[in-house]
Image 1: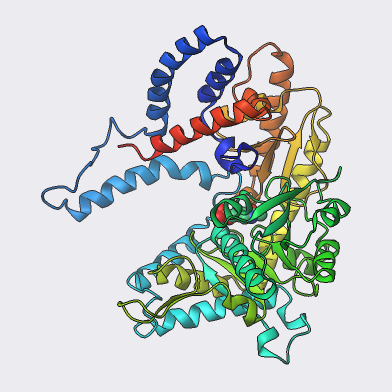
Image 2: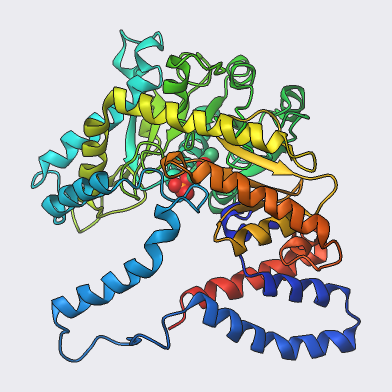
Length: 508
Ligand SMILES: *Cc1c(COP(=O)(O)O)cnc(C)c1O
């Protein structure tokens, strides 16, 4: 497991006690390590209690109950969980996570889900409505991302097309598999390589591992944008695709997509814009007059884009769109089995059966929000971003990484930023801890545009800085893991810990 690219949101929220255990372990001599190993099980038990808070107060079902439980009782229990969990994200304490969260919007999506809960687009003959929804989701997203201006209107095989996937990760995995198979077929490349900014999402590393595509990481410059000349030097005859983010998950910075995609075009290789985060913000920001660097299909070198409907598209969780320049490229994504006794089988994405209701909810979200709604939401989010950036810049102990719009990463040259994060966690904030370099980010959603939320964040952040300054001696909870992660032996130990942690998540 490569610690460098483990999903930031995951590592950012991992248990601080686990982290400090790892820190002690690494520094320890063998005898102490053995002692620590004995402590480890106790530690895991503590973590389990935190990760599974309901195991004592609610019934745990390890097998299917003999006799079915009353539906009302099941619903009642779920209402209790909801009541316990809802306030934190609803009141705007979470970075990212829930991007819309408006009650009426949620109720509407739930109605749509209920109407379509049986639909499976694998059976397109039974539910042609879902194929209508998915075709239109792709078309609406493509149009928003410059398809009409892509200079390909004449030839269908050159037109922007795509499919609906289950999320940003699947969109990226699909695109990388597509480039791999395209390059093998068209160029005979058997040892494929991709070139991705170090700030690119961990999904690219996942694709690298799953599909055996070597990944080369482009360093970023002092503004956290991918270094184009470094990327140029990484290209060789095995390169199948270059990628850039619009914007990146860690720092919210848009890479120089124009230059990177130009480079790819020059060399006849693919270029993927990861607009999972920005796909449903940047087009509207541009219309609002913000200075947005080009990133979409208006750039001739951009051959695919991922855009997450389940983030700022305000759909329910579980949909994303992957777009391609031309159906020729899209065909390399498809799976076909012509000899299977089960019949002629095909699927466009990784899944077989899929939840049609999620595509229905996505379609309904796009229709009901509308261009005006997206524009208004974007305006509010960017204005909140401006307010929060200004306040952070006024705190002399903090600095913002690069010049972001609404995903704001900040660090400190004088204080331990993870202690600031810990203090914020004590005030109910769920922020993302990042490393390389050490910083924390807030991904602004509509939840933070509610009255008073930005002010509360700023107040709490000021208190956090004051507190950490006044208590310099205290040990940081999160702090050690990030420094640790830089050294090789630690990487594998932290990797093992993460495996154990995931095991706990599935424990009953
Ligand atoms: C969220 C995100 C992804 C991955 O999306 P999931 O929906 O979590 O799988 C990829 N790239 C960027 C830039 C993202 O912000």
